[in-house]
Image (tube, rainbow, N blue to C red; front, side, top):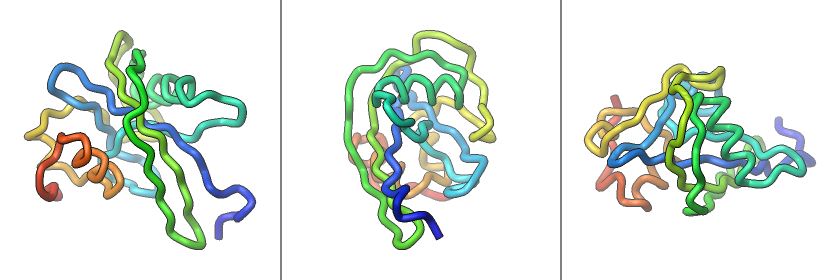
Length: 141
């Protein structure tokens, strides 16, 4: 059981857009192992949301990004083990070499059509629907 004093966890995830493609990674650990997600992670104490976004993208994907602003905030509550608040930002790549980090098995840019062939996490599907990247229900791989 999660320690209630350490909840909620606050995270930063990034919608990295390159022309008409969005960056997704296949998660290598629980929760959501094997699901495709928007890369991101925990915001460390005294770390800004923007700094966390840039750090997590660099660690998980090898890319350097230019942030373009906050898109949305989502809350995931599954008592008694999980309570997360995730701040989603938009960014574009500005350098680096794309490669999966330790939290991801795979990472790639996906077209809107590609998204329908991926097993996307529920929270990420919700964000992609909200942003117009997905229309209807995603089709699991």
